Image (cartoon, rainbow, N blue to C red; front, top):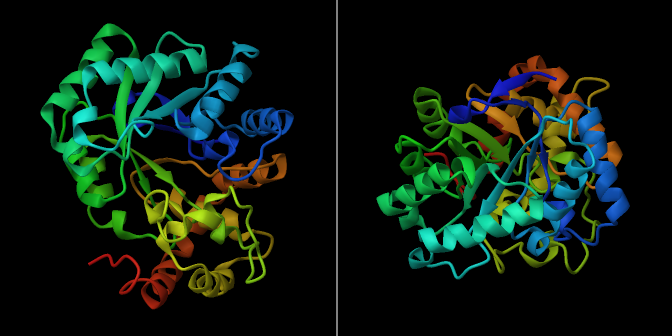
Length: 327
């Protein structure tokens, strides 16, 4: 699989990574053996980047990855985790003292002395512009607790504030065929600054897998059931903030762009990979089949360029004005 430089980290990572929110059981129950099989299939498919967070299953995702890598010390995997969402979401909690506690917990969960990349996990907006926050993160690097740091954002203005800081290595942002706003300002700014872009929610919480219908039901403990209106966290994290029914209609239009032999998910991922400035895209996967299918999208980058006009046409028709306008 193609390896791209992950922003200011200087590390090479696969164009298709693996998001591991689902390993924390926030998408329904996860069998430990199947979780390990998912990680194994990812590695076998050429994936060299895992994204996790301390809040995924309250550490379960990190622990699963840590146990997996301890049994395979020869693997060269970059692991990015995130911190901050286990605390009350007020700017005052984003301090060096708390950062040290949060990072130490993640290091224990992952079984490592130094975290490859730690990201602020969608903190309150003022945090992105607070110089003391960046000074604290720099201290963690100086102390050897983390190698690099970045941010995960909900909004484009948050991304731009972080990109403007000289030590921000990466920005993780929602980017998919139903969420085009980052294309206009964030990706160009990141390219100019040398900041890596990690594209998350690439399949709009599964909408762009093409497998859902009006009859699809999700488990009570699945965020696609309990967070459709943003009841638990930012609505953009669930179906990219798109109404489920409207999303299904847009997916049917999207299916018209598919060539023979390529799935809806592979096509959606190929489009993201083709966007100039994207370092890696991190689809989640519940089973081995999904992992392998997602990874194979790395071989279809040219398709992503070919369907670009169709993606923009569908976006403008279904989402431009009333969901999350680009302008």
